[in-house]
Length: 403
Image (cartoon, rainbow, N blue to C red; front, top):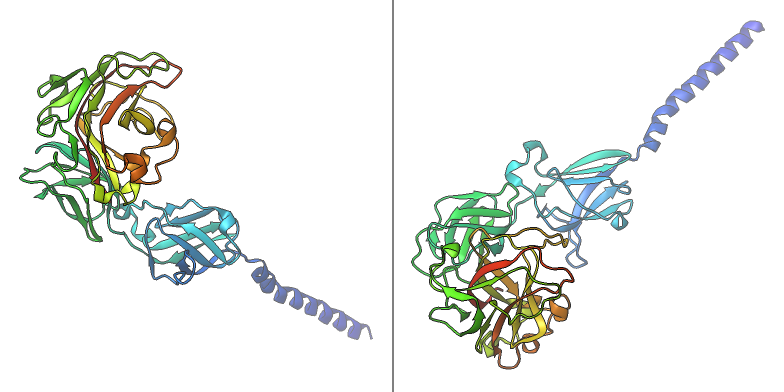
């Protein structure tokens, strides 16, 4: 009898151990909740919220899968993306691909990957991420001379095949590692024409010309000269402002007192006679399709005081030039390192001394004729004196179509 009881107890213990061991894998599977990506679709609403085969930098997408809540990091080609976890659920995550992905410097094992990290694990999903065509947002000097250095700003300047400046081929260039700029020496110039940059992904071209001081010119102080009064001087050979072509206006002023608005004093303004800003038959296009531009040279450090650009002495809408201030409002001593092009889209002529809202239309901004005088004023609207004086030259005031 004891033998039978012993065997029964032994069998019962073995059975319990078997049950415990057999349950361990199931428990591990039930508690595994690491992220899984199963697909990628477009973020936009139907009918274009389709499944994607590739994606571009800057594109909004939706990652589909499981256990996507609680993401701590999402990387595309190894580049971290910014994201708002409020846009996530267990099965989806809406995220914007980083706008800047330095394709040439990405390690081979990170190319075409989406890496998704949560506190519960990490997954890597293979997906085609392609370099889009380039875009041009700014040019350091649109009227540079042959032999000058020019830098072009934008996105996706990767794998460049060719560059032409005013119709002349550029022989050598140097791209920034992140593809946001490219620099080169201006070749010999024979004409006015756009800037074109061709990469393996496509071509970007300006809608306006380089090497062009007449198209849209309001005043170039030479053959298109509606200049009236105000500047400290005009010159074509001042040693502080070499490297330009033809005549330009110079504005010079010592440090400004607090709340100094007397732009008419000394040489702190440039004022033209009436001239055509935008053709009458173009006044119904969007305000941002045109920009006011000028070349400017600021050789000495400048910190404080604002250049106001207004029409017909009217401050209802003001364009501002304040290169000594960054986007966060921090100030620094600015100098231009030679002649530079500055562009103010007409959509940035704003109410409230250039800090309010844009005009509803070009007719509201420029009037029914699209014409009027141009005024470039130095003003200090701060309760503190400016940290420095101001010494700069201006040329080629113009309004050109940019879109």
